Amino acid sequence: GLSWVLIYRTDSYQRLKGQLERACKALEKRKAEHVTGENQKKADKRIAKLEAELQALNRDVASLKMKSMLLMSVCMITLLGVMNSMYDGIVVAKLPFEP
Image (cartoon, rainbow, N blue to C red; front, side, top):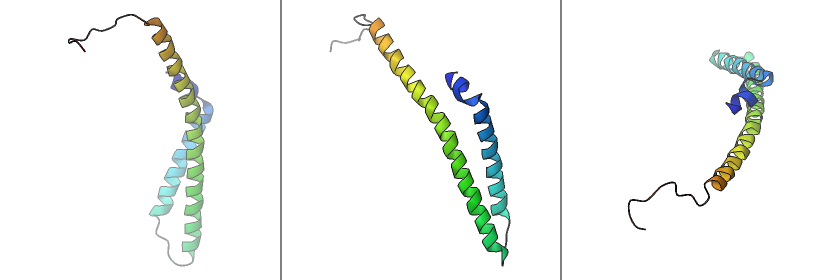
């Protein structure tokens, strides 16, 4: 729930996701085309440019997700501390044997 609020519903994530999908489709289309002769160098340059763009978009999406992961880890560590203090000294389970 918190990840959806922080990441997936934002306009910047939706925009990056759309750009990423378009770049993937364009790259697949360019790789599927068979070019020979003079146009081979131009096609290779276009493919390299699209791959660089795809890499940059993936990096941007990963940075957006990293912020949420850091916040979630802080929340979990805090929750662990709170639960530890709540159940401090209270028996929550009994072992079926003597240790």
